[in-house]
Amino acid sequence: MMRNIFVAGATGKTGQALIRALLGPAAGSDGGWHISALTRNASSPAAKRLTESYPSNLTVVEGNLDDRESIIKIFENAKNEGGIWGVFCVLAYPGMGADASGEELQGKNLADVSLQYGVETFVYSSAMRMGPKYEETLERSHKAKRNIENHCKELGEKGLNWTILHPGFFLENFDGLIGSIGVAVLKNGLKPETDIAFVASEDIGNVAAGVFASPEKYKDKVLAVVCECCTMRQLEDAHQRATGKPIPAVPASFAWIITRISKATQSLLAHIELNYNTRISGEYPSVTEEIGLANQAYKMKGCYEWFKLEKEGTLTEQKNWNQLSIGKLFTGR
Ligand SMILES: NC(=O)c1ccc[n+]([C@@H]2O[C@H](COP(=O)([O-])OP(=O)(O)OC[C@H]3O[C@@H](n4cnc5c(N)ncnc54)[C@H](OP(=O)(O)O)[C@@H]3O)[C@@H](O)[C@H]2O)c1
Image 1 (cartoon, protein in one colour):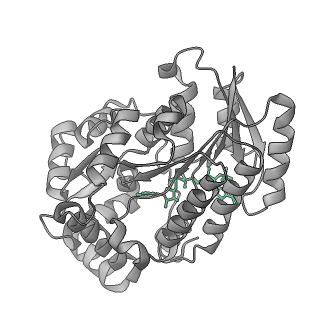
Image 2: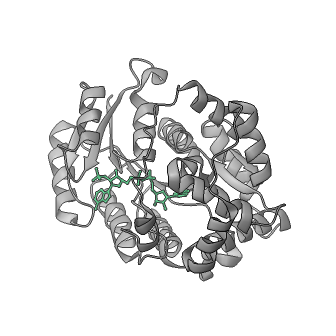
């Protein structure tokens, strides 16, 4: 039986990675999947690329997560083709320091609609956290994500089968100019011993595909999608070994200024320090099990292997995926 998965964020990094994992060459010719790929604009280059890449088992569907009725319409139309079997929900980041009430509403609405239409498996890709002790201290996008997760769990009592992914810090954050600022900020702003829980967005897609392939195994579970925890020194070393070049970074003085003036950057650094501290102190006791579960769904590659693939040009990721400017980074637009 063909299982139809509605992918929110289908034109973005994680959504595309899931689609590649389910429909790409590595998935084999007959995975039995059909994708309803959500976009706000079906004629955008990214949406057209999806249609061209998967002509027979993907349909681009137009809708806006801010407009619940537009999503309901898609689920209604899908009834003629056997309905939506699974939902993958990844939501756009509102921006560092930006209000995230819209993100929260989008996630809750999509979970509600999924329950209403009898979706079998709802996978929400959220973000890594610091364990139970810090759940009440979360702000903005992290708080929105926590509230969406709690909403999914409440809907679980009414029959929604949910799985929550907690991805770590994307390696793609280091791409381009913004990425080289990020490298310098983390190198200079974190304690030398602080390691970061990294993941490549490609592997979030791979893990999500593993969940859709065995939904019963991961039902009502949280998976920490982390490929490797390493310090910035270890990351630089992996990059040097894999590519023969240092990882690009702007001068330390520039990073120092950004960190001084940007509250959002200070908060990011504090969040990473806290994530490290809770992982090593035992305040986040379930973390090892959660990382293990994600690796059962798909055995992820380490940072060195990702840098190596990047050098060989075998990654299908587009560069400048984040389409960020320094202004956008701090204003959330
Ligand atoms: N970067 C990190 O280190 C990190 C770590 C952990 C978690 N995360 C989380 O990962 C998420 C971002 O994932 P990503 O990087 O894969 O996303 P992304 O590449 O930024 O893509 C965003 C997607 O959202 C869609 N979208 C935006 N607004 C929409 C709306 N109103 N209605 C429908 N679709 C909409 C876009 O589609 P169209 O433009 O085609 O409509 C696009 O497909 C964020 O929630 C972020 O907090 C990031």
